[in-house]
Length: 505
Ligand code: SF4
Ligand code: SF4
Image 1 (tube, rainbow, N blue to C red):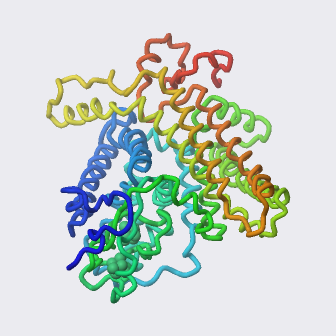
Image 2 (cartoon, rainbow, N blue to C red; image 1 turned 90 degrees about the horizontal axis):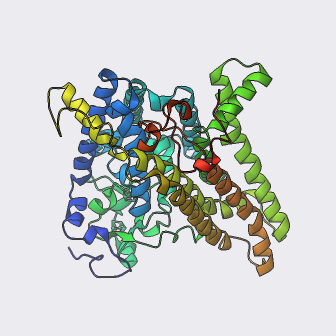
Image 3 (spheres, helix red, strand yellow; image 1 turned 120 degrees about the vertical axis):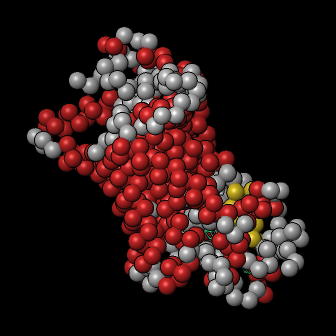
């Protein structure tokens, strides 16, 4: 079969044509092999979570889930693409047996949007704080098991990949993050697609499954909804699917292609605001706020208090600010457009700053605890009679770099996000006829929102932050106990803001 992609149409490096890696990726069982690897890792985490020590930094479930996974996820999205969805063990059923997924019913039409995923994402952020999931290996193990159960049931009951596209909160997070990834699925030669019989890349051909999330490679303009399963590449009889390297801002710079849908745009907004609230939940002012609310409202239920705080930060405040920005943008530009069109036109501009905030946050935890995988593995092996790297776990290992480097790097990352968001704002989709001046004015409220998110994140990053899933950094351990009463608090890299801020009582 002639290879249209090999014919050289299109531009950019095609990862599917790289020696060795390309073959492995296109191999029929390539995804299954990666999924089985992650399944084995998940099984170990569940086992240790349920039966091992319950101090998170000493348990594989605590360390791998809340330090390694989140850091590596952000790095993979930044440097390559949605690799975790590609190797996701929760989607194993689809790789194992097309029989199940082909027979299932179609996902209900009224649920084919991002609303369910947003609701699950909001619930997850709330449960994460309320149940201190990061501190409980046992609950983390159950979270993994519940995830498997939900994914298996939905994949078995419905055709396609409704769990990935409409429900999975991690998938939604990854989809949004991958909008800024430097790779994208596409085709080598569009003419080949025009004459292609049956379009197996999306419809399947009986032997191979088509795209579970209903993306058609010649028309893909965004990484949203692409789980990088590469089923399209395996199904294409013309070897025409490519996984091309691109400019990371390529898709965000074409906001006219972003769907005019509230659910899609508000998903991006939710992830951006949750980036700030998630980091805020780990610094002293958050506990002060909780204490203050406890005092003024008389509410004695922590769940209710956290529900109020995170309901406000992840739902009410974003809604008000997004609508205010859209209203202001419309008024300042004089453009004749609906609020929904304005929000859709500018929502992609939130992606860079949002991604930068999450990267700076998770990157901080990763940089301060990544090597913790070594002692926790030693500990696990010792517990099972295997000695590795000596008998005693090296609990002094954890940090990848000195704490002092972290804050400048975090601030640089966030500022880069602001710069990229500003570039996207400049290219926002506005009705034809809006003058250059009107375009500049229309972008101002959105730029203000981007700056607000970035400023909030940067202030939070200068505060002492809880070290969830990791032991305190070496610098902190050397300090007297009264300086770090929270045990899991880090001094972070801004000692000048401490002690004036003090600690929560
Ligand atoms: S299977 Fe899809 S990508 Fe391949 S040639 Fe046909 S339409 Fe194009
Ligand atoms: S376009 Fe569809 S089939 Fe192709 S990699 Fe993305 S999700 Fe998989």
